[in-house]
Length: 203
Picture (cartoon, one colour):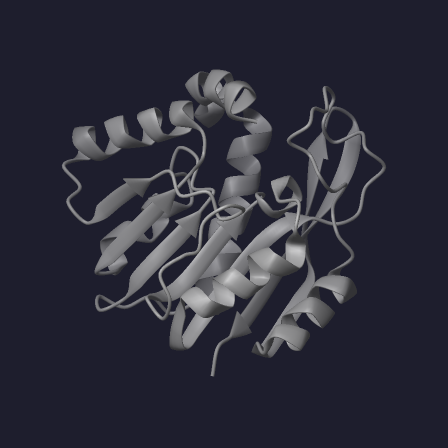
């Protein structure tokens, strides 16, 4: 996974599908989450920061996590270039490491879940990492036929997810005010791929 994304990082921001999807996610995110200057946000799978920088000026701090060194390098250079002081970049791997508990007010993850092998474990760790009243905002592919990734590799553990299945997992873990639904259709190489948004609260 790291090698593919390390290479892709250099042109990630100029890829039309990446730009379009990031814009759609940012728009949806900000209609559902009211960011404040006291919040600590975790952006898991932050990539080059296309979603992150829409939140950065609104919150107290963002911990940006990505397992790709290439993605982290690009993001870190943006942080330096823009003089940003409230973003910390980390390489925490949620599949092998526990997150700090009761720490984050918002947990954001965009197009990362299908790269995580144990979906339930991911949601459990996300839940535990949130403060009381903290919110999860997650975006990923609706179940597709495998054509989204033209050159699939071992980093792809799921061909998307059914929104109802995601809602059931969130409910079983303890999230409340759950909303999981398709919100955008991404055109890519002549095909259309529905994207879902999942929101929930830790009470």
